[in-house]
Each structure stands twice: as structure tokens, then as C-alpha cells.
Amino acid sequence: MSEQQPLLPSAATTTPATTSSLRKRRIITVVAPLVLVAATVFVVLFGERRPKEPLALANYYLKTSPVIDGHIDLPILARSLVGNDINKLDLRSRAPGHVDIPRIREGQLGGFFWSVYTDCHAEQDGPDFLNPSYHVRDTLEQIDVALNLIDKYDDTFRFVKTADEAVAAIKAGRVASFLGIEGAHQLGNSLAVLRQYYTLGVRYATLTHSCNNAFADSGGFITPVNETWGGLSTFGQDLIKEMNRLGMLIDLSHVSDKTAEQAIELSRAPVMWSHSAARGLNNISRNVPDELLSKIGQGRKQLDGVVMVNFYPAFASKTPAEVDVAYIADEIEYIAGKTGRAHVGIGSDYDGIESVPKGLEDVSKYPHLFAELIRRGWSKHDLAGLAGGNIIRVLRGAEEVAHKLRKRAPSMAKYSKRHDLDPRPLP
Ligand SMILES: *[C@@H]1O[C@H](CO)[C@@H](O)[C@H](O)[C@H]1NC(C)=O
Ligand SMILES: *[C@@H]1O[C@H](CO)[C@@H](O)[C@H](O)[C@H]1NC(C)=O
Image (tube, rainbow, N blue to C red):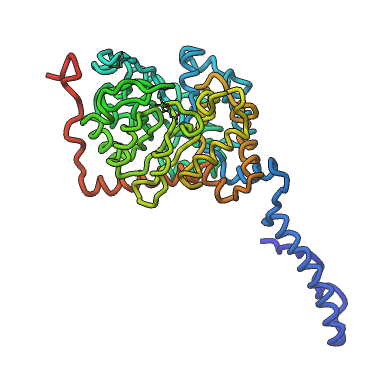
């Protein structure tokens, strides 16, 4: 074992002190530089070297509190561009669309929900109501693509299923990768499929996409679609209960106002909007109305929730060409004004939108949005919540509810399939 080298020569190696005053002087001359060096080392290693300039400060904050985006459509891009053949998709160099590894690193994206999505069908008596089993196949293919991309680039991504796993992945420098399905039409009218998606790692389900399904009414797109159920069907009520029991987040983006109200009323767990804009800024049915926003963040546990803000200019504004970083910051502030800052997040919809705001062209640009909010006085704490803290809290809330429900009532929902919706019911 070698002796640790002193920072400075010790008093013992120099001429021995002869008088007490000399000794004091020596102590001062030896100790003072030691203290100075130690203090300097401490400041260099642990001191806050907070940049002043907003973009530099945003990047500094995002290093420890990176963005966890609620909705990125990379898997559907892989399907439409390369027919799910991920050998043909190189994420290490500039990829088509809004997402690749260099831009993820530049934007300090710490995690995201990989949307595993299939198209829905609008006809009310069409295949989405009648055993849409091909949705299950297509969803499994989207899950397969997502998991294989995560695996192909496992030095960048890490597949995660819990809030704790996400935090650990981020600490390890990986991009925490959750899965989410975008419409209950993807369940093939079976809660057994929901449970198996959960087993595969799916951690949110949007109740509808742009069409009604067997569980719930959609909010449509620009204008509402005609109601089928007046919100949730009875099967939809069972879906909510089963999602609570599993710990799968209920996503209210895309749903009708009645569906959202009823789901909030029924759910025992916090809810999310994975990628939504505010109707108060653009009166289209796809956006969240003020009345719903002001129900969130009211303190009752089941009204915890997070509205993750969509970047699509056509949702954000009647005049999409005006949408830029400042506009999206306005949108976040508008929503936070109704819900509180602890209930907003980022749900860009990258790779799923045809146009993007000026200055938020792809995943490399998140820091610019955070810089804009810094200029508007948002604190480090508020920004950490917006970036990822709020969605992690909401997920933890759903995990806790599931834990309690499974302890108390371990049985699953009373039936798992709507046989009357299935032309070929089980024997
Ligand atoms: C919606 O309902 C209205 C009034 O009943 C009807 O005229 C219209 O055709 C319906 N639209 C669709 C898409 O079914
Ligand atoms: C918003 O649009 C709906 C039609 O979709 C209309 O009924 C409503 O009056 C509009 N609200 C405002 C505030 O303009």
C-alpha cells in the first residue's frame, strides 16, 4: 500500500520550528494554501456553474432533468417508410422524419413513449366494432419494431416499464423507452389483449383514436364525430377498471369530452393526455377544453394528471403558419394557467405530424422551448416537472393504485371479451 501523496510538502519535511510564533506562521503558511486549494477543488467539482444565457441554462437544466416526451411516432414511420425492415433504418445518421440518435442527444431527450399505433376505421359498423383482430397483429408488429430498434441501438435506448426503471435508465445515460398504444380499437375488443399488451410493456392506452370504438367515443379531429355511446360504453367502464388494476395509464388525447369526463370520474389513478393542445387557443374538437383542464390539479388524488403539449401547428392555432417556439410556450403557459405547472408535459407528436413549429423542427430543439420559458421566469423546479418530472409522478401514482387494487381485489375484470361484437365468438 503506497502512502497518499500530500498536496503540499508537510511541515515535518521542512526545517523544524524553533519558536511558537514561527510555528504559528508556518501553520498559517501551510494551512492557508491548503484551504484555498481544497475550496477551489470543491467549487470545480461540485459548485453550480450556472450559465446565465437562457439557451445555455436550458441545456444545463436538461442535463439533470431531461425531456420525457409523451408521444413519438417513430414505429409508424418505420412501418410506412421501410415496411418495418429496421435494417433499412439508420438512426445513427440523419434519419427521415424528426428523430434520430444525433438529434436526440443534441436535444437532450431523456426518454419517450414510443407510440405503437394502427389506423382506426370510421364506419360505425365497420371492422373496429367487429372483432378487429388485424389491429392486434399490426400492433404486435409495431411493438416488435419498437423493441427491435431499442435493441439495435441499446447503447442509446433502454426499454423501461416503470417510473423507477426510467429514472435509472436516464441516470445511466440511456433514453428511457416506454410503449403506448393509441386507441382501444387496437385491443381487438378483448381485455385479455390489454393484459398481454401490459405484459409486453405497454404503459399507456389512449381510449380512442379519431374514430369511436367498442369502448368509447372519440373527439374526432377538427369537428366532433357523432356519438355511439355518449362517452364510455359499459365495456369501456370495464376497460378503465382493468387499466387501473394493471397500472396502465389512461390516455385521454383524442377522446370526446364526455369520454374524458367519465374516465376521470371513474378512474382511481391519475390520467394523462399524451399529446394534446388547448381548445381555448384553437376551437377544434381534438383539443382539450378549458372545463376539463380546470378539473386537473385540484388536489384530489384521482384528479392528478398531466397534459403533454402537442407541437402540431394545425392543432395549436387557427393560423398554423404563425406557430413557433414562442407560440408553443404560450400554449404551455395557457394550459398551466388552468392546471398548474405541475400538470404539464411535452407530447410533441414528432414523426406523426406533417408540419412542425418554427424553431421546434425536430427532437434536437427542445432546449429552445425551455430557454423561452426561462426568459418568462419559469424556475428550475417548474421546468424539471414540465420536462419529465410530472409524467413520472403521474406514472408512479398509477403504479401505486395498481399495487393497492391488486392486493385488495386480485381478480381481473368480470369478462374480457364482448362476444356480441365478435362474429366468431369463442365456443
Ligand atoms: C351524424 O348525425 C347526423 C344527424 O343525425 C347525420 O346527418 C350525419 O350523417 C351523421 N354523420 C355520420 C358521419 O354518421
Ligand atoms: C367551437 O366550435 C363548436 C363547433 O365545433 C361550436 O359549437 C362552439 O360554439 C365554438 N366555440 C367557440 C367559443 O367559438
